[in-house]
Picture 1 (cartoon, rainbow, N blue to C red):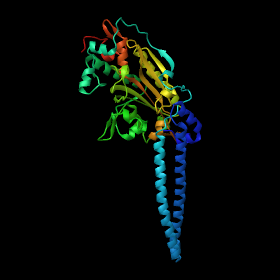
Picture 2 (spheres, rainbow, N blue to C red; picture 1 turned 90 degrees about the vertical axis):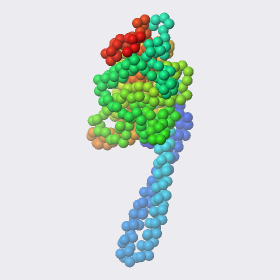
Picture 3 (cartoon, rainbow, N blue to C red; picture 1 turned 135 degrees about the vertical axis):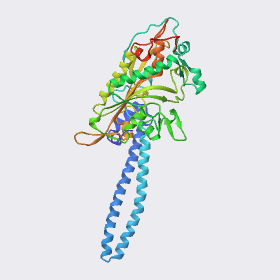
Picture 4 (tube, rainbow, N blue to C red; picture 1 turned 90 degrees about the horizontal axis):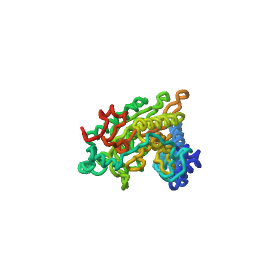
Length: 429
């Protein structure tokens, strides 16, 4: 969440930033935060004064009793009793204001960086780079869901039988391709200096709150009601929460973690062509990158993460483009975000396969993730970053559709050692 320091000292910047994100009632939300904080501080000032006065009276009582001034001592005791009642009321007032302030701050999104373009939706995102190999497909090229059926790679109907729509079953070489991609992505991350983490795929409410999935995204997360746990929508949640309530040494930064997990998203409200086949699933595999860094170095970390994801797409020989998201298309928590999309020649459309975001101090403030400066030993909020490297479903869809040949579906050279075969074909074992 935004810090009070930023809200109170850079009020106009915050309001303009929220308006850039098309956050409704930006000025009112900021003014309310300032008003609640003022009430909290006034209660704290009164509380401090009452405690000081109570302490002063308490110190006098013993002396008055020793001097035989019993009446004055009793009067002092009466004043202390009144002050205690007042102190109790002020403590409640201060605590209520503090809780109200935190709850309100959680409803205010992060503000975007200056280089984030203006805009309301995907059509306003800025394409900053395109690359990859051009694709020439044979006549009557098939979309991936038809290819999956043709070569018995993915069974969507069986997934519906076992669970429901959006939970496919991978078979034979289809399953081996999934495993190959996971290992390829993890090995590439390790080569780039990322420590691999194998976290739980179920988290508690505090973890969901720390990274910003809660309280505003409950409807998109699967909730285990009995234990009040949530299935993770991304490994960002458990991995970033490793550093919740932690003070790191500056020399430890940047921290670089990667993790493969299954991810679970309800995707409520999705419909049409966007949900066909692998385009949008409720359960899918993903390798995630997470970085914890200093404010001074986080921009460089972001660029390194972008270069890493681009390198993966180049090795997979896929046509891709990189977009800088506009204010209206960014997530609630990000300060800047770049999306990677691969082109599906068979579907004639771009498919998002990664978002790489810098959250500035927004998540760290919720997580209470700080670092200690090497020189003056003062503590400061970290910057957190994360990105998919990569999400498998649409990568698999693009690989299948863009590499179909009369011999079968060609496997990119970088993946062959991981797969153990060069084609997805009728020999499915």
